[in-house]
Amino acid sequence: MPTKYVIAGGQRLAGNVPISGSKNAALPMMAAALLARGTTILRNVPDLSDVHLMAEILETLGCRVTLFPQPGVVVMDVVDESNVAAPYELVSEMRASFCVLGPLLARRGEAHVSQPGGCTLGERPVDLHVKGIAAIGCEVKFERGNVIARGRAHGGHIYLGGPMGPSVTGTANVMCAAVLGKGVTIIDQAACEPEIANLADMLNAMGARVSGGGTGRVVVEGVDALHPVSFEVIPDRIECGTFVAAAAITRGDVTIERCNPDVMAAVLDKLDEMRIGWERRDATTLRVWCDKRPRAADLTTLPYPGFPTDLQSPFMSLLCTAEGYALVEEKIYPDRFMHVPEYRRLGAEIRKQFSTAIITGVERLQGAPVAATDLRAGSGLVLMGLTAQGETQVLKIEHIDRGYENFHGKLSALGSVIKRVDYFPARRRTDARAAA
Ligand code: EPU
Image (cartoon, rainbow, N blue to C red; front, side, top):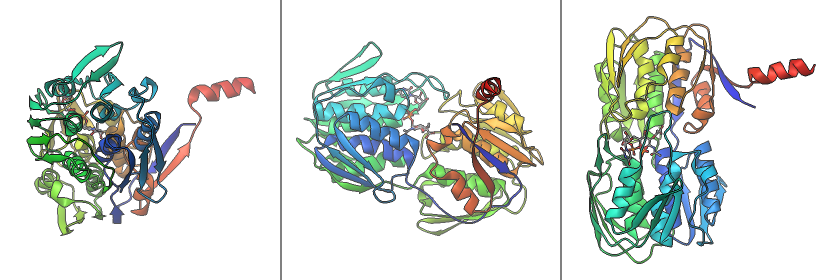
């Protein structure tokens, strides 16, 4: 049965909220468990539907996965390394499953992974993954909807920059493909995201020789074998940024715990521009407060350390109630504006042209039923519901479950009035009436 959020707007968020582990670090790190036979343990993994899906994919690849025997812990035991094909039915559900390509190829010498299609964020090709894997000496071809890669890495020099910047999961795939093999691989214009640094640290703990993880040049020296490890996933900077925006949009005062303020520079700089208060309490704690209407500020999404595309929609929500005009420019996914019509349903004033939106802040949003079009659009809609007048219902929250652990529980603990409610979709209700 589908589930929706029902939110009574108007509560000011206050209190403390703990941040979960990073989804976008955990997914490629789970895939990296395939690089060594035996039991790899990850800690601080968020309990999300995407993590459950990655576990199912790993199971089909001969890895026994135990999810959350203790909070945050995922145990992965690679027992059978004969299968090299990830099933289309599962892979098509989640793009991050393409991250099994590099580890499978490196360890089993062959990988068949279905070619991801487009999604609500736009076209999202995989040409950079393919180019990188070919450049280290492996054969890659497309066959009946699958990417098929074979061979052993022998090193090479790769430029991984694309028209929209470097690819995050592309960098992860090439790094993983190159760790087991001969020779030295140099990846220039590698993605600098902290999630890549986390993966590189895990690979090194497994016995790999990776330097420069999290910088624009990653160097991988191939080794003969890796061993399983127990390793910790970094805090989710996107969840952290979402709670920053939630504190500000409700004019609240929230202390965000178990986060890493060091990787939030672009977001904190934006808070200064918008006259939103913040302080770094200690190495893992950030306090954010807002006692008057924030000032509008322009925003451009960029690869890390720039402002993250995954926070574009939550911050657009905030800008919808700020004072003045703001220009939001999307430089990673030019089509990542599917949420705009839904935001307008809540009374937002947004004009959009190509990859740019102009937002005119309004004093008050009005609650209404809306639907999440993707994960981050979903959290943005919830934030708007928290401040809108009256009731907001957010449908299609399965998108939100992909990337925010216990979102409504954390928001409730901060004082918001938000419920998760099962509902009958309209068509079924009609059927039920007809049957009666
Ligand atoms: N691109 C190419 N060719 C490629 C790969 C990417 O042109 O071969 C383009 C994309 O179309 C896009 C840009 O490069 O315009 C960046 O895409 P990237 O490959 O970096 O994205 P990704 O690795 O598929 C990860 C996150 C996304 C996040 C992006 C950008 C994971 C599992 N996903 O995706 O997270 O938006 O990086 O930071 O790490 C989310 O969590 O909501 C989410 C979508």
